[in-house]
View 1: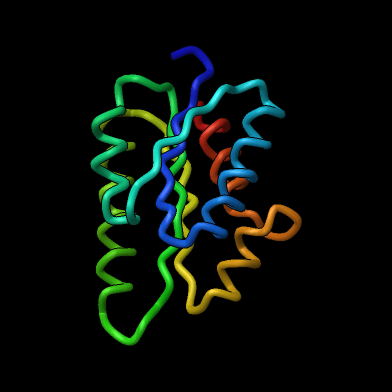
View 2: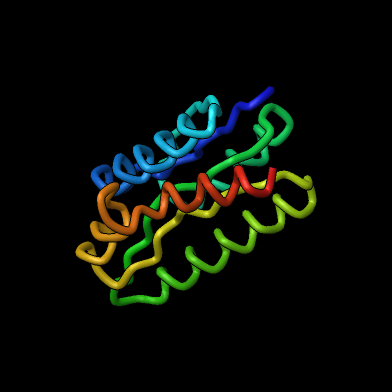
Length: 132
């Protein structure tokens, strides 16, 4: 468990998730942390995967992307996912870096996941490390 961080990644948008993983893993390597990745079919499933692994790692990074559509689905997934991840972090006193993008369109997600731009995967990794 020493210096090992679990990335739980929704790969629903593969290009976005790959960019977020790169940002996170590069940041972790720079700070001498090891990491493993478990993929989730969507963001809604991330909290359950975190819960199942909460005792096996010193910290976590949740990565994924939810893009606004024409229905209320975006709000439900975004709100419940973030709430449950925060609950897990507080209840278990474990840091969980939050790198789940909530964007209006794919273009916003590409910018926020790009390792050369605003990569939120890197930011989530650095937040997790800081909390450790």
